[in-house]
Image 1 (cartoon, one colour):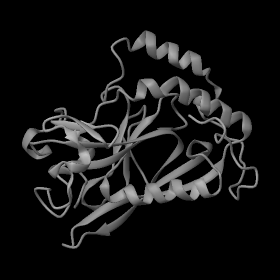
Image 2 (image 1 turned 90 degrees about the vertical axis):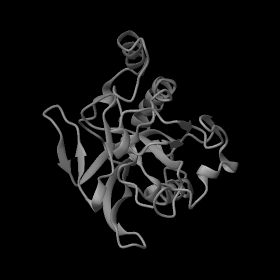
Image 3 (image 1 turned 60 degrees about the vertical axis):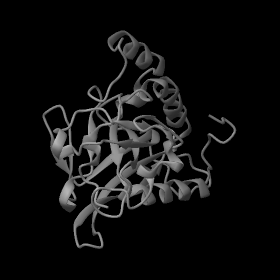
Image 4 (image 1 turned 135 degrees about the horizontal axis):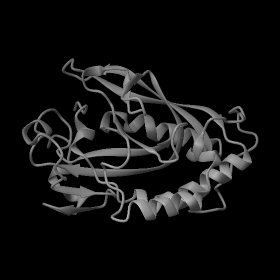
Length: 248
């Protein structure tokens, strides 16, 4: 991470708000790292972190895990501590396999695929538009895994942005960059908007919105949490459940 640019422009138009209720902002980042190391000696997997996916059929409510069970929410709020762009290909569809199987081929850098067929992602026929079994999309789909710290946990929730939401997420980060605001220096609201593909099939896409920027103390705390978590989060697997809502 380039520390020279990891700061927030004080002239940003986003309001500066004192956040309350965020457990992560009161926790010692090194303690988080130590607890993870002691409690999760085999590493963090897809089954250890709460995961949220865009609903299928154009639904505009998130189903979010809570201590009292899943709840439908119009928006998810928090701080995006990290994200990664990835590709994954399953030879069998989610419906055929029943889900839960690892991808036949995947890439966490969008450059080199590991598995079958593997190799150069840019040259792979499965990554070309029109290669999907249905629609005009890619058989090996691209996604963005967003790791969001919410109020009630010191561990992030994994929120998956499918191909139909990637443009909005990139544009959001670009606008923050134009204001010299790191994406992990603001609180964010993720809402869902209904749309249709060229066949008239409805789907939902993510609409991100910056709510407020962190103060200097909170920003430094989030940077510490990022440093404590990133190496661990990079091991989180890709799941076929993340692609249920994709409409090419």
